[in-house]
Structures are given as structure tokens and as C-alpha cells.
Length: 126
Image (cartoon, rainbow, N blue to C red; front, side):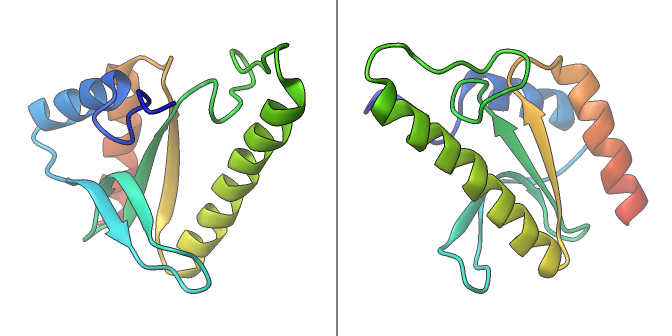
């Protein structure tokens, strides 16, 4: 699992590229200290608007369309993937409590459509 990247994944880079081309300015891998949580790193952050964008992988975050659990070593993977989803919910609640708006974009979503959605939310929050 060492080969799995924490940042600069292909879907994340594509979304950032589309956002940048539209004139959006943001922070990458932005650290936010949330109360009762360890340090949270946001994939794409708009600090002034307090919008946190996470680009979620279908496997790791159990996408309803593409998420799956491997048949091999199921006793390891099932709780691990469930915990990822639980942690996502916990972080979202903590972000909302701190005044942030969390947005999740799946890796299979079209980057142009996702960027349009993100831009719309950011513009409304400003």
C-alpha cells in the first residue's frame, strides 16, 4: 500500500487543473486543526469561503456506484473500509462545527462538472 498516494492523485490533479483554468485560487493539501480530531488535511481548500473539497477514491471511500470489497482477506478489508467511511463522517461533522462546508467529489466524476459545482458553492459562500 506504499504506492497509494496521499495527494496529487490523477483525479485530484485534473480537478485542480480545471479549477485553476477557471480562475479559482485555492490551497492544496491544506491542514486544518479540528477540535477533538487529529490534524485534517483537505485536498482542495478555499480558506476565505471556508469550503473544503475532498476527492474521494471509489475503492477507499466505498462509492455507492463503484465501491467494492475484495474477496481475498475480507476480514481485513471490511472493517478498514467501513472505518474510512466513518472517519469521513466524523471529519465532516467537525468541519461543519468549525464553520467549514465539506464537499466530496468522487474520482469517477467528470472534473469539469465537479469544478462547476465547487465554484458555485464557493461563490455562494463569499
